Length: 215
Image 1 (cartoon, rainbow, N blue to C red):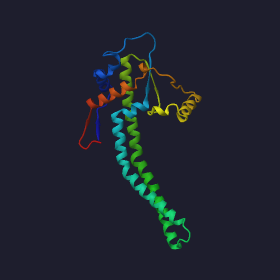
Image 2: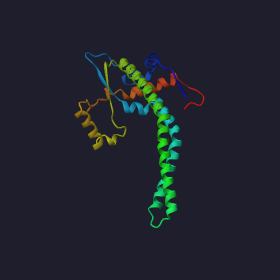
Image 3: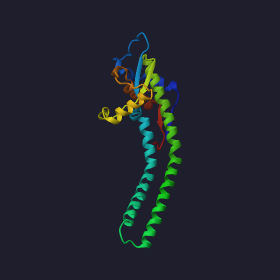
Image 4: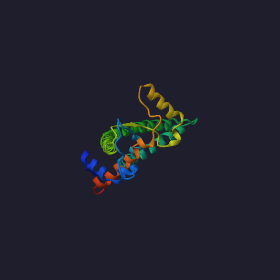
């Protein structure tokens, strides 16, 4: 497992001490301006590129893999038996055996689903809460360093080819219909996503100590 050194002070100190934090400012944070400065963060990008989030996701996937393998085997057998049952002239005794096996496999799949929820549901929730706190600490540290008073989160697909396709357009339109504000144009100077990712990843290198057998 990963032993995490928590606390806002540790993150902020690491962020201010990293030269990466000021990469967009040519070595120094931009000068303070009059009025309220607003920035945005693509939360999906941060979660996708943050190494701690990647590690926790990989750990969950490793835990889930045996269930997926067993589930595929059961599903393949069910499909094979259903194919046999659809054939004309099948022996009634064989058909009854197949039907019983299908029923048993479906019950096993349901039990597996419950077991996965019991084993991984709480773990997923805990991971999300921890990552949310860390990301928000990173956002606060970067925003203070750059002099932004408000940072707004938004979500865009990581694959830029999906930006102008109907599902993404419809998603944004629905959000606006419900009263949500959706960024329609973002100048790169106010998108803090890359520097937040870099700051968080630099912080992980300095403050997260992998134990033996870490995942």
